[in-house]
Image (cartoon, rainbow, N blue to C red; front, side, top):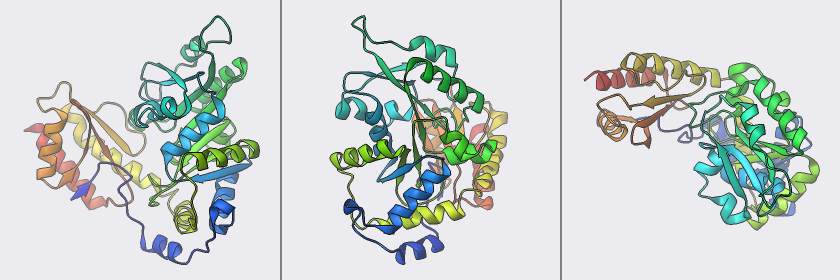
Length: 339
């Protein structure tokens, strides 16, 4: 099977497995795992921040970061398709009592003036806004890259209203490669970031919260409260360090493969938006097939794709998809869509 459902389906490469097998480890709850400490220091440095914290998942990393900024009962602003309010099972409300309000889903095409107009100050018996969250790249926005100019303007909005700005940077590595923006420049715009190792970079598990030393000290407490304290986790951190050393620049290959898939489906009127990174969004609103039917037909031909809604599907390229498999997937999808 050719698996284009997600870039989370990758398996560790032989080199990554060797790094895991030989990793020096210790008890990370006691702060004694040297490989974890090295990973945290490396990621913090790449983004120009003081510290970072290794977490089991991107969802936990996001939720830790939100709790650093928004007290119970206060408000987070984000877009209606943001991962933090779409795919994290209501965690902000359930765990932290955070109220969320969203602007209309526009993927990476955010209008900072719209966001600014939504901010609610203290007083007037309204829920006060405490933070803004954005997603780079944007998953449900087709892997779109938020322009640097937009992020700078959002930083101005946050500063002008005394708000925190958080980046769900699960695929920020893709944005870095696609637009050439240095990671430290992204890091300088945000109070906190969550960055994922188990999507495009191909590690088996793990994300990090990035921020100031003070915030990360608090984040360590919150991670433990949420059940995220880990012991000899250097085995997993070693996979992340290997991924950072070997799998960042090669993301350009995934972008090129996604572009080839987009070219194959474009004549059939289902391409939802321009493809910038490794995600190809399909809008089947005007096609005879709906998303489940397309996925079933593709599976019958040995191709797995994601169904995101009745008329929405998604293809994602990644480390484990070869050029030959992309060609085969492109031919398969073109044949199904023209039938």
